[in-house]
Length: 458
Ligand code: RNT
Ligand code: ZN
Image (cartoon, rainbow, N blue to C red):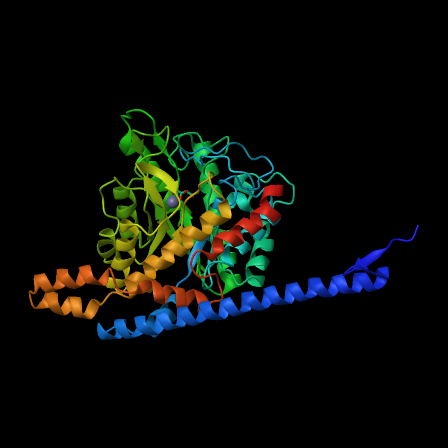
């Protein structure tokens, strides 16, 4: 049977009909693209206009927005690899997450292997303006399907990461991993059992060697964080004993000097199941760090709820060489919620700028929310940290300091208040536009697309 195609009631050949249909579809596609292009141009125009107005407004209070954007371009975050897979890692022998930390939620689509994790990180990074580092934990090594115990880790297990970092213009930072292991228990580097303590000393020494290789390969020091969960659920009558052991372990670990890596040490108030005592407390590490010239890591979730982390910056920087941040959002406790542009984070970044210490601080993120889209979580937290920084850089600090020097308290407070309403967002949008990443909430649809096409199929 010959099929009859009709056009305006007149029979036409099948071939001609198909050509016409194809042309129609092509025409519609071209028109849609043109429309999108035109509205993009309009949007760009608006962003530029808003920026020009903001630029003038800021110039009036002594701020050069062009310079601020330049500084932002050199402001690198260290993206924590562990948001992509709820701190699971790639050990063949991997057990459950332990060490007093928890990723709550079971949102579908977490990265299940090294390729998925790499793809997710790159996807997230494509929505974050600027260039950034990647912060790896030891359990994220490329173990090639082999059981490699923690005291056996070698730089070769991170060879593919080093290459990947180079290819993708992402420098690497590193962390030893004392949790999620049969020997983790409640005490690792402070364990009175010499066998267990030596195991963790060996692990941490080897991690420093890995970090050294990373730093050498990337021509920029790799920052290695040391956090151990050691503590006690209930009252201990041996506070001094465990701390003395931890001190001795650190002395042994740091005995080797390296040129291409830098050590930082992270304290904490308490962990889940370790509520009564933390061996590596804030006082412990500040003492150790200032005596031994080690960087201090400030995790914004690791202090008492009303304690200001921002206020620590100026004190610490007078006694330790540099700081590492773990920017997080504690909700009632060290819950590791996604970073947002909240008052504590704004204050922290302001303090760094006010201390003129931008290049003495390393900006790591540390949260793990398993209840929402994980790529989205990276993008929200990273952009929030960047917004805090751009706002800090846009503060009319000279004028404020002038008022303070003159004892003009009313004027200082008035300008501080007015500065909150200055059009920082127009500068931020311009920064995103310049970096060719989505402006404003545009990234929501992009993350949704990746979810529909990739992560929801896992
Ligand atoms: C735990 C510490 C630590 C970890 C990561 C995974 O409370 O913040 O930094 O979050 O090492
Ligand atoms: Zn941390």
